[in-house]
Length: 524
Ligand SMILES: Nc1ncnc2c1ncn2[C@@H]1O[C@H](COP(=O)(O)OP(=O)(O)OP(=O)(O)O)[C@@H](O)[C@H]1O
Ligand SMILES: [Mg+2]
Image 1 (cartoon, rainbow, N blue to C red):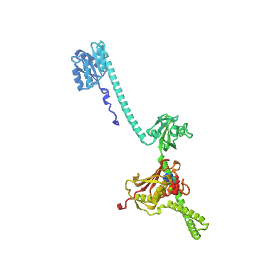
Image 2: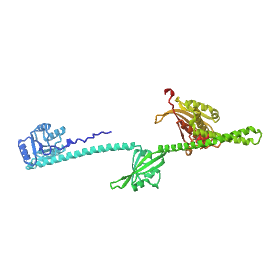
Image 3: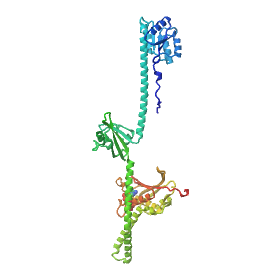
Image 4: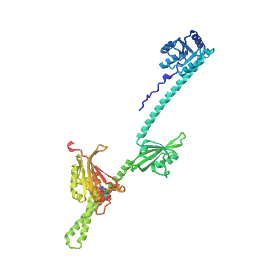
């Protein structure tokens, strides 16, 4: 990155020679004593406040220039040893830029051109009237010199300001692209006339964003939106905020908040609209999760109340049916009816039991548990069922997990539900990969992570939000109650854990369960 001094630039070296109120210091390089005398007298008589120093050769002139500061040089061309052109060359070599006027007795065009090329300010022939005009020539040379200095100063200032502007521009661009939000300026034709890098990354199209109408950019539409926020800001000058969602080029649905702010001219008329675009997809996801959690909590309370109310009459029904079954003869034609009632009552009892588990799983005793052991014992439980269902289990368990705190029966129930769901999803057989890992979240809590990935058909996008809802099932009545995942959810919540589902329709389903790792009691 370029650096530049913040203090004002030092332009002193370009200040014109001499100080206001002090005489002009002139160095006269002239070998002829007669001309020295004439020139000096003419100048001292003239209107300029001037002091004249003599040098009778180029060498002497250079020597004086080393020692003192002069405002102007009057240089005779014909000098002994070093002529005027050689003197000019020496000035150039030494970097001396004092305005110099050349005088010559015998005008020579070639010399004049060469001297001009070497930067002299004027060229004067020693004709009859030159002495009377000399002060004018000097004055003009000094004025030109001053103008040149001013121009140089201006050029330097402009270069300095441009550099600062570029620096500020780069700084601003960095800030604008680092704010993590999209920014675009929309003109009165509803076209993007400028956008930052984030906008380009988020709203990639085949074309440049510049010139694209806002309704194409944000809505992939073909005409102005009915409730156009840009128009509203153009017409009212008010700030507008809207939310909308869009499927991006990677096929993901993204949620954005758009804030439109008017940009006004000096008359206060809105000429453009600045559009701030914030990605609120995570926020929306969190809101949905909160709604889901709230819904489940409410259903949990309802289920718990219902289960309590139903439990006692159900136990009564079951007891009495079983009593009657014991009393009637095996060949009694009513036995079949009673068997059906008993089956139904048992089914209801199981549902009620599940509902109670779902609503108050925290009533179980917690202890330190080894997750791998629970996975093994759960697999042993359904070993046969898996074999019959032609399900291959792949255990991808690399490292030992630290213990978690929980209830073994409950956690077994979670794993069992997930395995059974995968099994049901693959009636023709398939595989279930079980992997474990640990992860640390943003609050520095470590989790044991257990992932179940099956090779089944996956879960359609249209129902994935509903699978944790109690009684949501896609299975036949006798195959599922739709409580498996909601119970699993309740159990995991009671363990301060979480469960996530991912599924690409057609590519299997993946359920990831997180349980907080217990702080080892030995370390307490
Ligand atoms: N691995 C999976 N693959 C495909 N779909 C699944 C998978 N796991 C769950 N589902 C879907 O989620 C729904 C809800 O599952 P949940 O376990 O809550 O209920 P269920 O299995 O239908 O019934 P229950 O578990 O009470 O016997 C299932 O009906 C199924 O549509
Ligand atoms: Mg289930």
